Image (cartoon, rainbow, N blue to C red):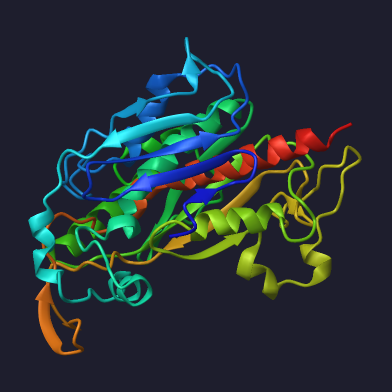
Length: 354
């Protein structure tokens, strides 16, 4: 199986399955001498871990990270950073009913067709549990990028939308509620909606907005490795993501060029920021902002029709512990993937300087 690594200079490789003994990874390219706050790493993990509130999956995992190499006396050594996260609360029997059938909108069918074999216990490598490893990698990247501000928040759940610009929001309130929406009134409405959907045995999707600030000018390459293209790849690699836009995004098509162009100030900054902090694939020093759309979780705790390995129609029903809405736990994942992209491009930028 290919595609287990992300990045060029600052690279994360992950391993493990949802219901295996452990998951983990190797972080390569982190420069030596970076002070690592292990408690800060664990705080990032706690933001993603299951069981943290009543509106997420009730699987109980401590998600404690054990570093095996690459960190000595609180600092990175410049060698590969190996880490492991032991799985402690698997209930593999919850998946026995899908051993010979395929869940709609999951990777079950395509896995079987591609590999001729699949780990049906929680989805194996296709499980969102793999993203815990990404959060570790992103937490290390964030500490390398201490001068940058990397934030993400829930801006939409179903049809409930936070109708405020990020500049008008107190981003320090992101973690003040279980939905991770920094507007208390909107967050309360979102939480109520998630609870209602969960009672119905159904699920709902949402949108996460990312904001990257104090990013230096010059990150990104102008052809295939554009900064926004790598951010898009990073976000679209996250489970359940169906869409990515940055800057003015799709709304920009309704504007004329005279309205959309970002006029310069004398210092090189721009009066507006429809470009979303990226021009020609290269960061321009303005805020980078983007939106990531997540589909409704595919596992429904209600009866549904599907097919088995022989193509026969069968009746099934979701079992076990699943998120009714993935976006509250996906906020630290979005931040982590953004941090990995920025760390990679910052190292590349440094290597190009004379």
